[in-house]
Image (tube, rainbow, N blue to C red; front, side, top):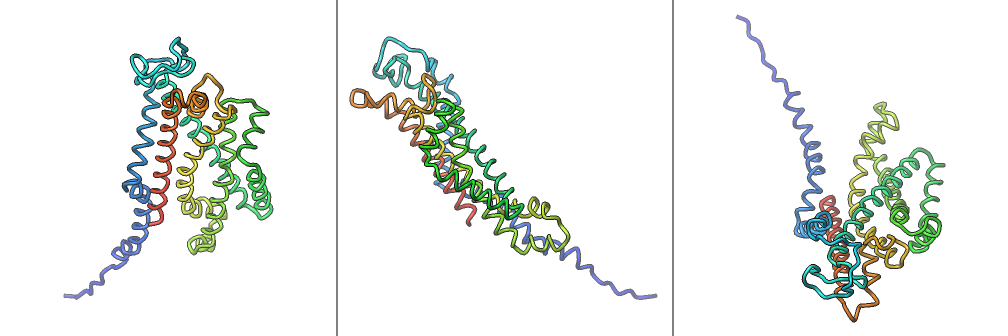
Length: 298
């Protein structure tokens, strides 16, 4: 009888051991956002944003009043068919605020991703060559050279007041922030060991950028997205408050607040209601952004 020596194959056992740190890192990255949002500050932010957004979304169900319909009861107090009263033209205040929330959220959710896309595309172009990097950097400097109000006035002078100019102003204002953030992330990540190893292994420059560098440089962009949303609400409110934003009689929180200022002493509710809505949105988005940032940095 011949005896055979059994040599255990350690490769199968070693593979999971080698892959365990990678799996742990992947799981941590996957759950970093969730861990951050489940903190008390994150939950409060989600409740604020979710509650206000839901109120705007369900505006037709929460109020049967037409936000554009004028009535004879100007500056009427709360009661009856108008739970929060009416404005100076007899329009239902609750209906205008709810539809104004919808307008502000639609503008923010359209303008901020548009600005993020423009900034990221410019950052990717800057990563292609040094000459392109110089051109992109000067483009960012040119945009930042214009104060937000001057930029808003210049665009509305060309296009006129309305929703589209507000979206363009917010998108342009957000491009440098997203672009510089992604550019710095690319510069850091492409000098890491894993990127160098991929290049040494024969991977093309584009493949290294798309498959290795971008996924590791994208986390700060999520936080920046959450930070930019309250800024978009502020910009829309400021433009509408100055009369260069959403055109009347379409409701927006900034325009409602602007129209209520002459009657602040006579009926403070006119200004308090849209101000509370703006404050809730800004605080909610800010809490969400801080929670996401803490979750990523853990």
